Image (cartoon, rainbow, N blue to C red; front, top):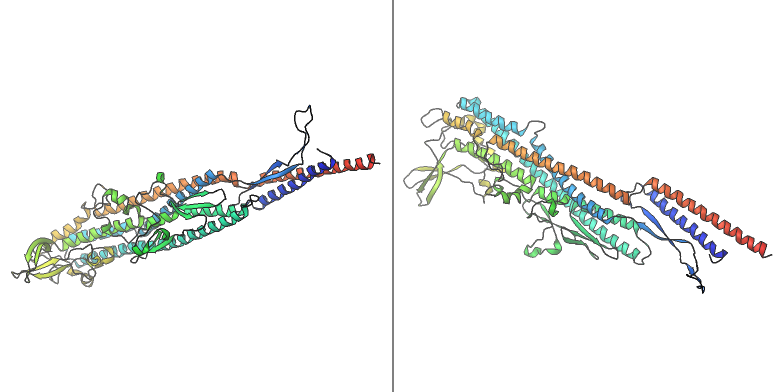
Length: 568
């Protein structure tokens, strides 16, 4: 040291910096349970040395130290663990929400409790088996109408529940987009505050950085994000490869409302031209959901995907290839369930009606000169009537507001009952769930159910055919199915497929939850506050403070001795 008084600087620096280190440690201890708090670590460095003239025979400069200083208070984070954690959090949130959707839909069928939908199907088929024994029995006829009513009401109730669930998910999507935009504004504001504080290259805005990291953690669970921090400490964020937050603005996510369904679809207003109906949607589902492509990240994407973009029916499955199905309808759990259930109901209803009201194909010209080429008409020779004797016979389940046949007189005077075909462009013509009802005529009088042949005989062959239709393998669940199946097997396959999907989602969510926990534990080893470690540091800094104090006392006594004894 240069002299005795210079030694006081050394002791004073020890006191001052030990006190500052104690303050930092106390701050860590106070925030041991604070969510998102990152521990602060003190790094010491030497103060500036005083260099003396070099002696002629010397080999180095003589130096006198002025003590110690705090070089930095480190805001400890591992950027690689942070990115890994946020990616896995987004993936876990995606599969957890998907699993939640499957569980909700399974509950609608009540396969684990209550009266199951499978029982409803079984009771409906048993009613026709009883009818086959005695078609003219009013008890059996009434049983058919009753079980048809229960079957249709239960099917429509499940379908309506899925629609309500879609609307509920729509509200969740709206709230989630609002939260995402709010987080974007928070990150932008924190960027500005951090930039202001750290511009002088003296202070680190640690608390603000903690808040920003918390916002990034939450945002990563909602959507797929990529982010970078520039030299000024400003974080730029991308969502689904589109700039969300930059240095000066937040490109907020918008919601586009469908005029028919009211479904909200997230899109980027700043990249869209709404006047020309050119909309840039946030999510691109064309490549499917694959972990290797990171297309399975974020709770919002899971919601939008599971909800779908409309209320589905059996037409959504019609004519699809396996590839088209897997990249389209098959990705939406709710829409897929709606379409498969509606396909089952459509097939059961049309199969029964076609037996009750058999048809043949003819060509003719009506009395006004209009030509009918290869149209289906009621086959009077094979058809039956009820006790009311009305021709053609009544169908069991009808389309609201549309008769099964239109009466047409041919130019030769023959009366034809032309079948009103289903038209994909006219929803009211479809034998689809939302458009069906039990024939009001049969509700009022079940004996009007067709069972009497034109010659007055009871139509046992027709009744046996109604009973046998339930075991015919005429349906495929979806384009991924190779084999056809019966109505009962179809429903079993539907439930098995749903259970398998739910099991896969659940297993992935559980596995990823373990991974996220493991990564978070690793993060906490870096950023977390250990009370034991901080107490150890506190003891260390207290001892250092005491040592510096005793050092100053010794120097003070030495100087006093020199002045008082030697000076005298």
